[in-house]
Image (tube, rainbow, N blue to C red; front, side, top):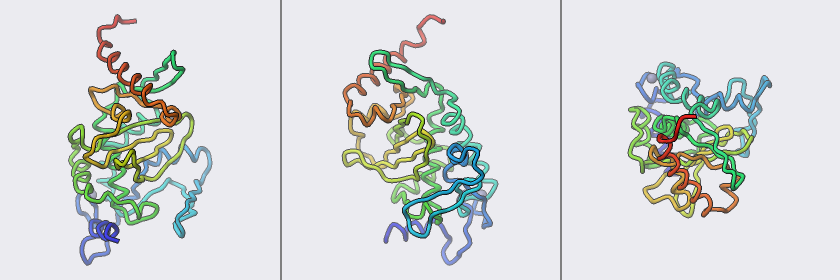
Length: 266
Ligand SMILES: [Zn+2]
């Protein structure tokens, strides 16, 4: 398959079976890198000593995990640590501890959602791209089949140079489950023919657009933008088929945000 050949070429130097660090070029042995941060595995694992990972792919599962799901062919320990400090630390603060995330309750509709008021959206975006990038690079299960295709080089550049790119480059659409922690390996996803990648981390779900096409409405207003409503839609509402209501709420919230600073202090 062309895709797998491309993936193999970008992962190993020609004629050399030793993995090298994809940031600094140092040859292995490399670090135990968590494609999905271990903190999200621990959410599921709870007090159990072992997390038993099962899946549908033959041979790859089941697998016992004592320290989360990791691969050993991406980064040297120094660069793995760099990536964790740059992006993962904030992602865990935001997505597990709720730092910078505001709860919003719409009385009229009885809907609870969230707003990413004080989250560094650039950093969050590059974190999500770094998950995709790591899943692309590794030659290890369960990420073997995942491939970024022609977007790989640009995404690698963005991750390694701390560049969040233009707002229309790989925009992120967040949504959230109510009390349903889980992990979904990065996967292709489609909305009305427009390709995305999806990542599920704990109760958070993210779509990252893999196309220059416009996001179909009403999901276009759900893209995280610094000057946008920054809202996170609950997943059951997302799937309930109320696109016009979703749009109305998002647009109203944008108005609300723009007036926020003029409101009297409590
Ligand atoms: Zn390195």
